[in-house]
Length: 441
Image 1 (cartoon, rainbow, N blue to C red):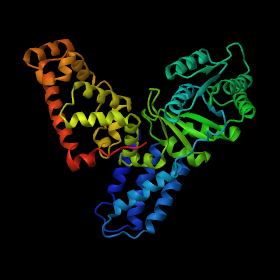
Image 2: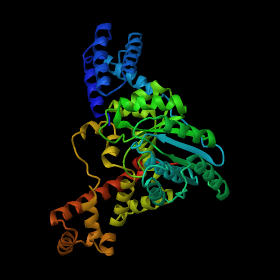
Image 3: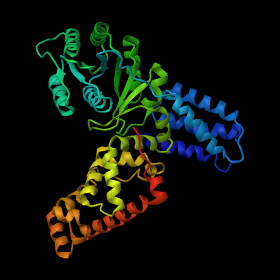
Image 4: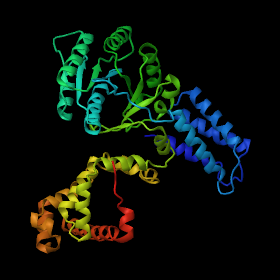
């Protein structure tokens, strides 16, 4: 995501490196390159021009401090303007009312139905809501079944009327069902089309009029670039939606939709889909996205994902074991499972400042832990608890049982021993108090 844009912007800032001050000439040269980078990323032309004009105006009005280089100042200005371009502040989601109602809209193939399932899971697990998914796509073959499967996967109820062809009535009945059974959030999945048409617009407008949702979200495939922006504009003119959902931001997208859509339709991006898994959904944070575009990482989001997997009592138990040098392979396996739950490994690594660029051309397989897990699973319960008993014959048996070789087993045992020593060092004394602060939700 945004890899090409990040590279191009970095090259643009190099024009100012070595310069003693910001001048109209070197700023113009830098911003000419920035504008080209934005256009290549499929950013709307008017948006790109307005953006660079604003940056130029702000740059020329700045006095460069002795401690700040012109290129650093330009990065700061561009960062702030990128964040503003994408909305500035994180947009709130209105969940008032019992039940709160979210209406999903968008073209067919944008990922609308899948995102409905992701949204239900997110609000259930993170906000303790009781969602009800509603199938109002009465045209697409297997649409109801797809939503039913998703509902089962995220363990939330689903409402449908397979014999009805009236989506307005289905939505109204679903809200009645939610009130009767105590569901406090209704997510209505509607029909999409391959293109914007009058029938589609009339239908979604009628549903909105009938159920008066708290939030009407427009779901769009980020990989479609300016087409996504144009479609959003047409939908907004008829539907006046409340926010945008960008799906497939983990794909080979140039980022133009994310950078243009807020300005063109004057509606905030509220959520982003970052992968195929049902937990791959995030609130959209403009400033954090600007950080990532400029290669600064996103350490705040990384910490938040870690905190989602954090259980205070378990952490205390683990810390005591580490201090007593009792950290074993059962604990090691537990840590691996927590990391895997945090999401795509390459995406997680890219959130660490400076790491994303280094990993650009490196493939990080989500099955990177598979060999380690196979080795640990080939150990007996006693061996996992007491790694010190792993002699040569035991190691050979583990290698054969895990489909690896003795060198891989030895390497893991060495790494485990070094990790255990390092963890014990970090949890002791002043360093331990600094490295392992008490996290609070």
